[in-house]
Amino acid sequence: MSLPDVLQVPDLDAFSLSPEEWAAIRLSLQVSVVAMVASLPFGVLTAYVLARGRFWGKSLLNGLVHLPLILPPVVTGYILLILFGRRGPIGAFLADHFGIVLSFRWTGAALACAVMGFPLMVRSIRLSIEAVDAKLEEAAGTLGASPLFVFLTVTLPLMLPGVVAGMILAFAKAMGEFGATITFVSNIPGETQTLSAAIYTFTQVPGGDAGALRLTLVAIVLSMAALLASEALSRMIGKRIHAQ
Amino acid sequence: MTLSVDIRHRQGTFSLDVSFSSARGVTALFGRSGSGKTSVLRIVGGLVAPDSGRVVLDGEVLVDTDARVAVPAHRRRFGYVFQEPRLFPHMSVRQNLAYGRWFAGAGARRDGMDRVLDMLGIGALLDRWPGNLSGGEKQRVAIGRALLSAPRMLLMDEPLSALDEARKAEILPYLERLRDELDLPILYVSHSVSEVARLADRVVVLAEGRVAASGSASEMLKGAFEATGREAGSVLSGRVLSIDAVSGLAVIGFAGVELVVPRGGLETGRPLRVHIPAREVLLATQRPEGISALNVLEGRILSIVPAGEGAADIELACGEERVQSRITTQSVARLNLMPGRSVHAIIKTVALDPH
Image (cartoon, rainbow over all chains, first blue to last red; front, side):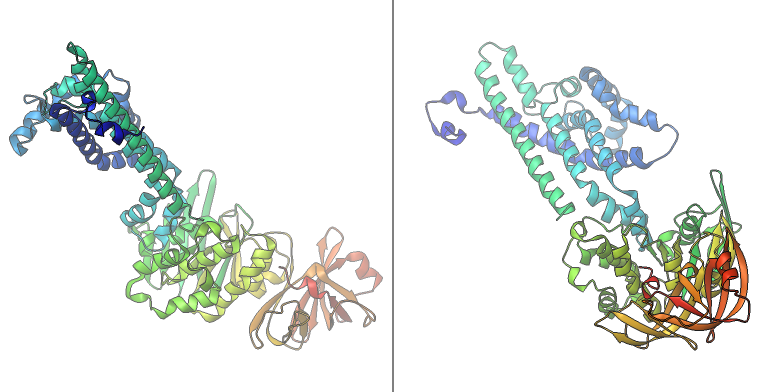
């Protein structure tokens, strides 16, 4: 039995999603996409600097980037709250000068997800940059291409599989992110209640099992779709690069 | 077009102190591996900044460490051909060839493309991808890509060394066409005497980071090559007189001498240089009969110089040309050879095409 059939059967009310649940799913997708897209330029830049740069404090930067991977997510969330909260040094600056408020907003959830997914994204992109043959970049330079153009026409296309993999990883991490998000922006339905937070809420109230199960199924489907999409994408790109 | 180079550079324990200038035609930087040839080329191309010195092309200062001038590689407009083809794997052959044209701007004329495709024989490869080209095809595309960037000069770093003998033989004629048909100076790095003999007009011999000798190709290649200690011989410049397509042989005319060489794919009238390795030249005091070698030249001994290890280098005058022969001192004594004596030099045809 395929999934659309299930949804069309009217007496299986247990499988139809409530408006709040739809909101949680929409919010999760929105937060994850924004987190992934917004962190991409920083991810590529950081990965490039780590892969090619030679400067003092490189291992410090590397450690800083990887910190969210090993810190308890609650700690990361709390640090974000201190820095980006309305009275925090960065949060106050953003609020005063740009009118951007992150704490207890969905944008804050996106920030938390971006920070948590950042090490995964940087790792993947960094590996792909290191796999790009620097001799090709040198050759492009001798043909008249400026360093920026070499990056755009040679380095970037060749590291694309790693970039795509990094984006998918960051997206998947964002979809599943819970601890840092709930610490930083709490669990406000319709504003900051993501899929994971909604499932958690269901498990905390009596009779919430059906709702938790429904959202769990949704989470599985979304994760699977993301995985398949990344497979298909990297196959497509791989074909273009190593076209035989 | 004059390139003058005067640089000092230190890399680990290796030190480079090189000064030379090159003009039109092909200038070979010649020496064994580790002599610093590639480092010199990378400095000229702007891939490495020298510790101190100057690189000047026709009055335009490319590097001057005193004045803190260092034009970056992408603004030098030198076509660079590396040992490996370095084609962009994510672009088709057509896109690879077009890459440098993007930046060449007004300097690149549209009709240049067809000419380069024709000259390198790569017209049929345009829609292929680098991944499924042979080694020789890849290197030809790489040469085409460098040419189409409208360079002021071509820098070639042992472009044949990564190829097997058959592929080398495939590309060498194309390089000769470049030299003869384009008015483009080439700085050519090589450790192969035969390549240098076929291509170079001038040779700069490098040894351990210093210029050991420099001069015209014939001069440099005539004597025993101290830089390599092998493949001593003579280089004659002549023109193709006739071709026998069936036997694959060409007759080359020199000043007062003719030689038969195994080069079927040549056009009549083309200038050509032939390297005659000294150890491939036999001497006979009488005209030999019933012999397989096609080249028997009459000549007169000019000098006999001991070459060590029981060998002697003999210089002959054949017509207006000079031919070197290396034989044992024992043979010199047995045949009673001495300067002024007439002899016949015997050269196997197959020894004359090194590839």
